[in-house]
Amino acid sequence: EVQLVQSGPEVKKPGESLKISCKGSGYSFTSYWIAWVRQMPGKGLEWMGIICPGDSDTRYSPSFQGQVTISADKSISTAYLQWSSLKASDTAMYYCARHKNYDILTPMDVWGKGTTVTVSS
Amino acid sequence: DIVMTQSPDSLAVSLGERATINCKSSQSVLYSSNNKNYLAWYQQKPGQPPKLLIYWASTRESGVPDRFSGSGSGTDFTLTISSLQAEDVAVYYCQQYYSIPPVTFGPGTKVDIK
View 1: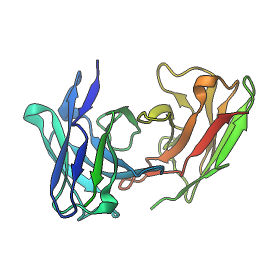
View 2: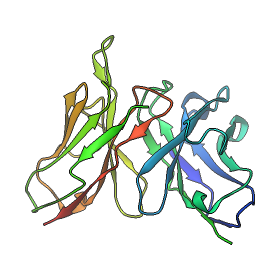
View 3: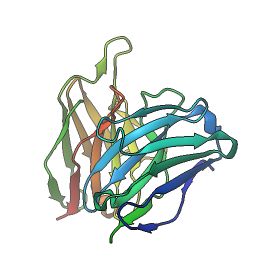
View 4: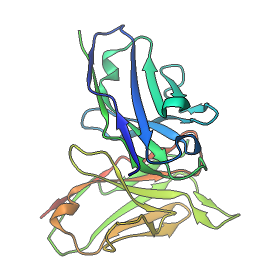
């Protein structure tokens, strides 16, 4: 079964750092782009950026460039989303999702269940 | 960035009736070289991740019931649920993948039972 398994919920304080993960299984992890999508409480979907785990080619939405870092470790089939200094406004659900094939210009067909990040003093 | 808009914001439809959601992009998402519209539809039920329903504007994802259909081209698209079922209560999003980065989503349309 093709699946993306995300790390568990996080509760952090403003200014702290955080790295959440997304482990792929059941397919060739290096052959498909992985995206990260934010959903703030009660709001819609925002695409943050994307990585090709095979060569770590990474693209960011202008809205998130410089705010987060996307990376991957192909040896363990895992993608990451990290923050160096969290803000309360980073409180959201974060999903990883696989693009449908090796082409970046494709929809996202497999989604993780999401990681809840809560930032509060 | 390509801006996606949806209408209506929400709608309530009786069981067995048709539900229609519209999506508009700020520029064409039709690639003339392959005549494909780079437009997808997702369904998100409460507490769940989004689920891909339709891509290339009108191709149903494997396992999606045939009561879901997509149409349109260029900048104007429609998702139709031909006979609403109770399990179709959800928020529906359109998304363009013509120009990356960034992928952009519409604001969502909430579908309820009347």
